[in-house]
Length: 204
Image 1 (cartoon, rainbow, N blue to C red):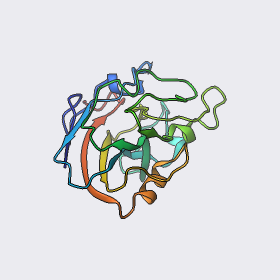
Image 2: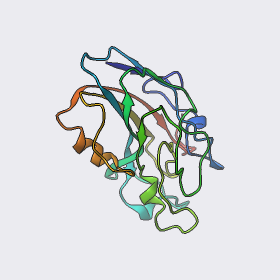
Image 3: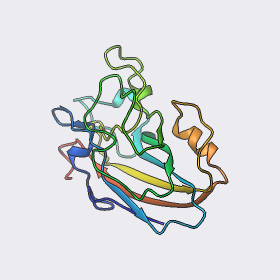
Image 4: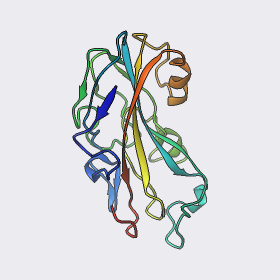
């Protein structure tokens, strides 16, 4: 199975159009275009995850003018998109069809392919302590890495072909729950990734 995007080239920078944040604040936050083919026989649905594996692990270093987050600081995953029950006959998601703009406190009913369900992303936890921003963030919310991070972040769009039509998950599910639910049901996986940085010292 193969996946590609007309919105960015594999391994290359992602435009601010598809990010949640840019240098002067929130960005257009449109989901990128994705298309796939060479789907394995027996596929009954797809699951889609977008994960940044470069999120800092020391919150006190984020967003500070007096320091750069070291590139070798230990990193963790930050989930930007979780979608399941994508119909088996679907082969493309148009740019901006699932997200077009950043919604304070999160999108409650994000748009998406008919029949598909979208779960929580990690902005739900990130904004939990901020009364102005706290809420459940469902669907796609794009890159918004710290401006003082000396590492460019990577964003992996991972598509899984599954041998079941639906995953048994309650609304508001997380990526961790998706991984558990689709265990032993994955027929194939395809990945495309791009990068994004708000650090002026890094060339995009």
